[in-house]
Image (tube, rainbow, N blue to C red; front, side, top):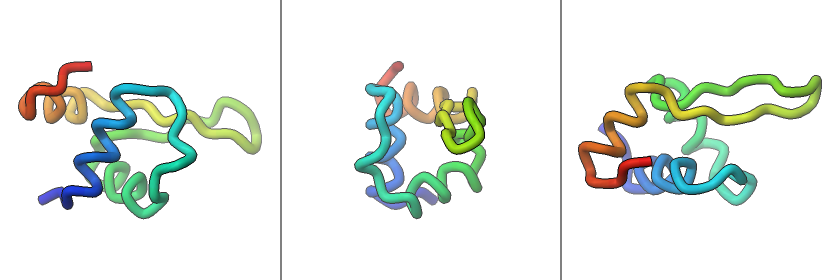
Length: 65
């Protein structure tokens, strides 16, 4: 089960590219649950992508991307 903070983090990630203000622990929990994945775009930079499961969860709570 996701915490309210983790759900909010997923919703924020669905709305914007920037994620620097999000709690790294929430992002880590979303990665563990395979709702988002981290992709290396440069040696010291990662991009967060919402997975299919993450998109399904957003749609289920009424927040399509």
